[in-house]
Image (cartoon, rainbow, N blue to C red; front, top):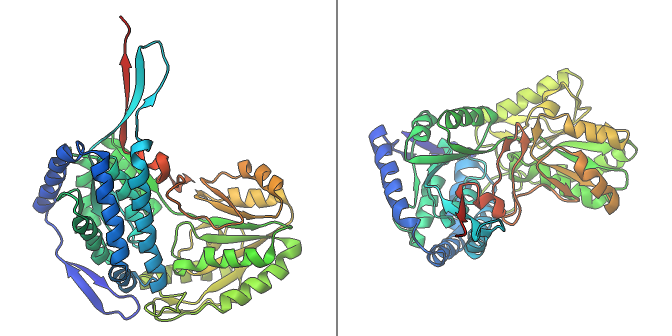
Length: 452
């Protein structure tokens, strides 16, 4: 039995029967059977259904958002925004998939030569709890529009949301078994990846889970895409607009109660403006409203599990022992963790070296531009970096120096359906979203007509 429990109240929300191996096998067979017909549907038909999915999300956003809030503690306004973003990605691919996947003509010695982008079949998505709808939809919308079939293994603590996602596609009128949520634990993932009728796997999650999934997929010679953890830096250069930068950095670190792979976790500030910036940053963080996630005024909710809050607590305590200083927050009460700011962070401390998944940010001062670059690139993660400067020429010069998958100037790192999303180093490989993402799970078929 898989149980969904409210991290704010502790109450059980729902329980779900875990599928047996035989039931999983039937689901995969049904998915494979559906692929044979779904891949033949027109883009017009797929687009029509995907637009209906977007409408379903908008029309019933409250229903879906409340399930998210109750299952993992996301403040209700942020949960609603997540549903609305899912509608956006559905609309984006409904409108753009056909042109993104049209044959790419290439001039050669042939009479006609081109690359065709064709669906590959059933794709397994292994997804996390922190954005229980968005992480899934940014896979599902392009995968289905490309003609593939999706099967989902979601995090056990958000299984109600997982079932709701399947419900979205069913209510929108997609043919049965185009998208199935498999109510299973992690132990069944390996056999699914190895199944003959499962052609690829995508995972968003921890490095340990990514390594395991990638290893299995590699043994089976199957495509995998990994979006793993991050320790994004927020770099405040000497000419940054302090007032605007502070607002952006507060949002970057503390939205979703800090439980985001792309959150700004390491705040790097030019030494001469560090005091001024930090005073205002601390004031704004102190004013963030904590409380009941169902309250529209709440910005900081609870963490999804008490064990996660305990992990963050241990990282902070260990860092303090090594010389870091807590200047705000630092206390935990069950699943609630105070918004926390820690100064004096440096390499060798967990708050600098590791991913901190919660409402805590480390602060490090730098003396010049090169040191800032070195501090950013010293991380084993490479998901994204935000830099803040009023000098556009300087920003463009700095962009190539960073090793991350994304550089955002005067903005927090965020995913956008129109742009590719993914990381470097232990943050993963492959790309989601945009025309890059929809092509990840296609057969890029070379077609060559000879001259006679």
